[in-house]
Length: 236
Image 1 (cartoon, rainbow, N blue to C red):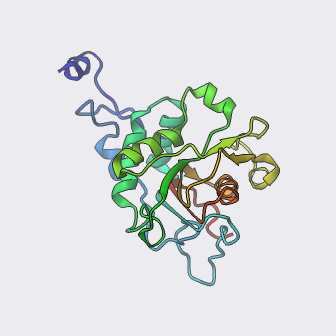
Image 2: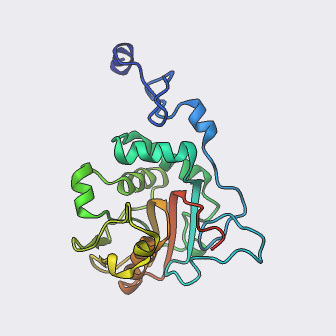
């Protein structure tokens, strides 16, 4: 009832495009939902990029410390607008929408661990401390928390990020890949099987650094799941 009264005074709008929404619960309007650029199958199980003809696909994650990666949408169009609304406009309810889409569309077994083995936990990529203070929240943690509620998997804060590390936003491709920029350590013994959760998979450098820290702390299998994947590495 309260939401309906508020909607009369302040009509709900789509978090991505700003168009009026029919209901306060509709964080994304129908148009933006239809416009989401879902990643087509097949995608590379290592880097989550759509597979080009075999002779052209050179997986950028072939030497990464994580075992597998998957994403729901391409980081473009309506998906980019939605992510920007979450990260820069404080549209936190979008994290629940993204988690629901991840849980509904992830391939069979993606959230079960290798062979369905136990000891699986979700771990969110920790943000740069300066950026977390500026936002007041962490998008990856919001998505991971909502995903944990949806799947029943435990969410563990298994990683910490050094204050000395530079954040990735706005950095060049070469800088993003520089391992000296990224400093992650485990808070203690890591779960044997981990699903590493982040908002956007860009170069994979941050995910690789997190996976290495988890392996150093005892993880045997690390899979990566993100809501969005950039496509600019497809032919690299």
